[in-house]
Length: 131
Image 1 (cartoon, rainbow, N blue to C red):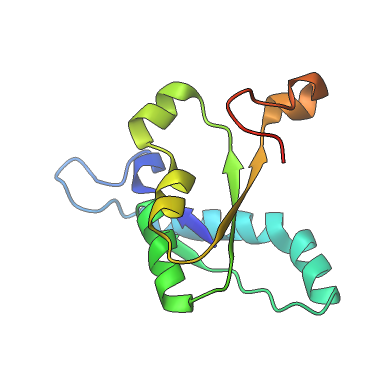
Image 2 (image 1 turned 135 degrees about the vertical axis):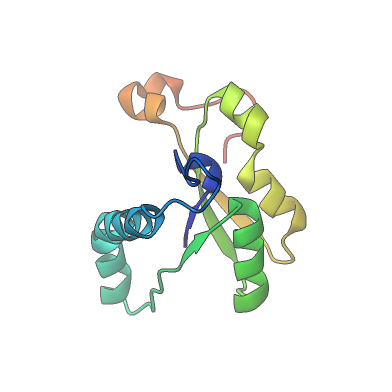
């Protein structure tokens, strides 16, 4: 599932307050990019016999994920966590924390830290217990 957050869309409204006419094309472009990015991992899961369904939503990421959980009723939710800069996290809050707090199913969070990829010695965040 990929959620496009309105806060990240640079100009959703035109000068008179109407929804920007470029929004549908922007949504199509992002959808195509996400589907291309996930094509290889999707193939891996499908070749292993798993059903893969990609869902796109537009809105508050935590609220959209919680709505999808309510609609779909999965046994487990697995979320990717991108390490945001602290000011961004303060402004937007932590999506995975909100989902974990409100989801009625177990939630597994998989972290990705770009610094860790560049320098493995930074792999363990002191605030996150090793698993």
